[in-house]
Amino acid sequence: MDSLETFVVESAIESEQEFYRKIIEDNLASLKLAPAIGRIKVVLRPEDSLFQMAIILRDVGTRVTTIDIADVEAKPVAGEVMISIKKEQYIPELLGKLWERYGKANISQPDRWTVAITTDKPAEEAAFLKEMMVADPRHRLHENLVEFAIRATPEGFRVRYHLYKGNRFVFVASEEALKHEWIEEAGAMLEELMEGGKK
Amino acid sequence: MVVLLPYLYTGGVHKHGLLIELMEDLGGYIIQKVVTGTEVNLIMLIPEKDLDVVKKLAGELLGVLMEAPLTGVEIAVVSPTLASHHLPHSACDVAEYLRHPGANTNMIGLARGMGRRVSLSMDYERKLINEHDIAVFSFGSFSDCITKKKPKLFEGIEIPIVVTGGPAELKTEDVPGADLYVGNIGRVSHRLRRTEEIEALDKLNEGVSRIASDIRKKQAKDPLAVLPARVMKEIENQVPEIRRVLSPAPLTLQLDGLRVKLPYDEFHEKIEKLEFDEGVVLSELANITRSKMKNYILIKIKSKSDVGFAI
Image 1 (cartoon, rainbow over the protein chains, first blue to last red):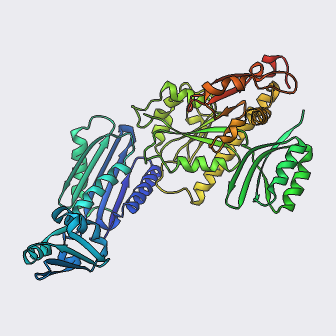
Image 2: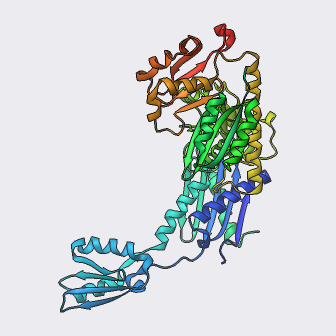
Image 3: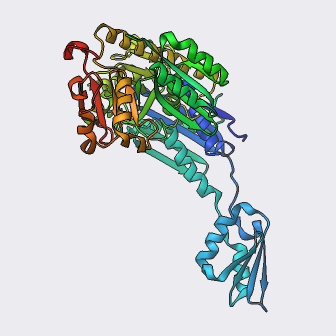
């Protein structure tokens, strides 16, 4: 699936459709979500105060473990574990996890590519650290998707329903109490997208 | 009576004091001076017959002098709420663009202005908006909302109302209660920079200037007892504390008065007793009240017919 291979915005009035397409594009860009979204369909019905959105996500990156971003080496004589970083972008998450586990006092950073941990059991800790999960793009994606949905929806539509399962995301928002058929309609939109969607 | 013309001077800081001195000699007024780095912006009222003299000096100083039709107009830019849906784009872009021709703008975010059925404004907010000369409401992209639901926010607003929204095909008559509707400035999540957006902002500035000049024309039939700019100058001379105020416009001119950004309780007596050369004090010529904005002082000048004379 290519990114944004289907991008449909439907509304009774064509010009309003364009405005919303632009708003959605801008918000996707500012949250850097465009590469993660395969197909998206949005239906607007201002006369019912209704906003429906269905999204099919593309495969996003898998979990990142320490070994993916750094070399981990045990130094039994010195009582240390040395981490040599290869990908700098995950350092904040990595350090956060390390501080939590070992305490700030036991961690030093001689330079920007190296993290040294003082510990009694270097070999076991090194083995554990190699497999430790540093970041989960899916978790971040979920946060961003919810943020995106809230930003794209008209502000007054405060009654919201959302479903996030596997690579499917459904969002319905309104000013009034949500009706079952609205959620069902959004589900049908999702089915339509699953079948390839229409351009 | 001297006819004063509003102009904006933009040029270097070097020797701009000459221009200020010239304005004093000619009997014009400096409304606002903004220094940014090595640049200075002077908004001023120039006596019509001396315009050539000022133009000549501005030319010598290598500055630019241009007309600023919204000088001395305080505009409220009202957005349904302060959420990211409406701000900073497009409401802030609208406010910024209105400042180009010299207006002072205040952004007002309503507490509960969002939505269709649920939107409403509070008494306090309406009074605050009514303190201004013109209100610009920045609405969204649905024509259904703009024509049917949002106009209830206009209830109780007594000043001219300008509405901006997305749909370009709507007309002013379609929006009940509005004095002007400008399309193509709806809800956007990017800075207004495309051709049609900038054109719409230009159209908005033109429309607002027209409304301001209509108000001025109406005012000319029964003029104010004293010019707001003159009150401004007297406050600068007689209330030295105004120089220590850090707001960008400590004295904000309006078409029929001015806002003094000093605390009401401490200074209202001083303002009421402001003396003019003709021997009258300001409280005879104007209503001085507590502003809804931050406890400031609001001066609304009475008309000549109310007071019986004008100075």
